[in-house]
Image (cartoon, rainbow, N blue to C red; front, top):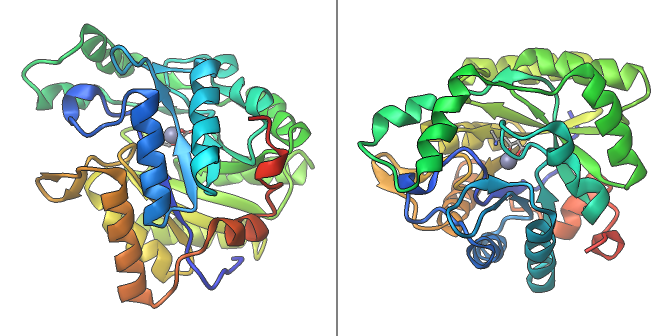
Length: 311
Ligand code: KMH
Ligand code: ZN
C-alpha cells in the first residue's frame, strides 16, 4: 500500500442514493450543493465528490450545465479537489454518466469498476409517504436494476479519463471489482499507482463489515503491492466506524450525506461539514494523523492541478 502520513478526508455532498424525503438537510439546488461542498472543504475535506440534482424536485440528473455551474463555483471558493461522479444514478446510461469528464476535464472523477445490483427499494419501507412522485418510482425501480459497468464500457471509460487528464477514483463495491482493476492494469489500460475507494454497505455490493474491509485491503495488497492507496465509504450506520478503521490502517476515509444522512445513531446530520468535522476529530484522536491539504492530495495522487481543468 502507498502510505501518506496524513489522512485524506473526502466528502460526498449529495449523491443519488438518498431522496429528499429522507432528510431536510440533503442538498438539492446548485446553491445548496455549492454551500455544502465549500463548508465541507472548510471543515477539512480535501476532495469533494459531487452529484447534481434537478433543483425543482431533487431528482438525480446528469445535466452538464448544472455540473459546470456547481464545479465552477466550488472551484472559485475553495481549493478542494472537485471530483464529479461518473456513477450518476444507477438509472442513467453509461454515456449520460460519463459525459462530465470530457465536458469539465476534472482533476479526478469517480470510476465504477464493476456492475452490481444497486438496491435502494428497502428505503420504501422506512417512510409512509414521499414528497415527490419520482421518489417512489425511482426507489421501486431499483428492485429490478443492474448498475452497469461492463468490461466493454470500461474499455472506453478508462481511456477517456486518460485522454482528459482525469485521475479515476476506482469505486469498488465488491472484491471482484479489484480483479477487474487488475485486469485493466495488466492490459495497460489503467495506469498505476491507483486510488481505490472501497464502497461498502450498498445493497447489492459487499456489506459494511470490518472483516470484509480487511479482506479487501489484503486482496489489494496481493494484486497491487505498493501501487495502490485506498479510501473507504461505509454507507449508512457504519460510516464513521469503517472510516476510522480505514485511517487506522494507513488508508483514507469518505464521509458525506451521499453515503449516510446521520451524525450518530438516530440523529440526522445537519450538514456535510458536521460529518467531516467528526471524521477529522476521530482521525486525530484515534490515529494521531493530521489531515492532508488539497495540494498534499494533488501531490500524492499526481493530479494535474486546478489550473488544468475545463471549468
Ligand atoms: N454512490 C456511492 C455508493 C459514484 O458516484 O460514482 C458510490 C459513488 C460512486 O459515489
Ligand atoms: Zn457518488
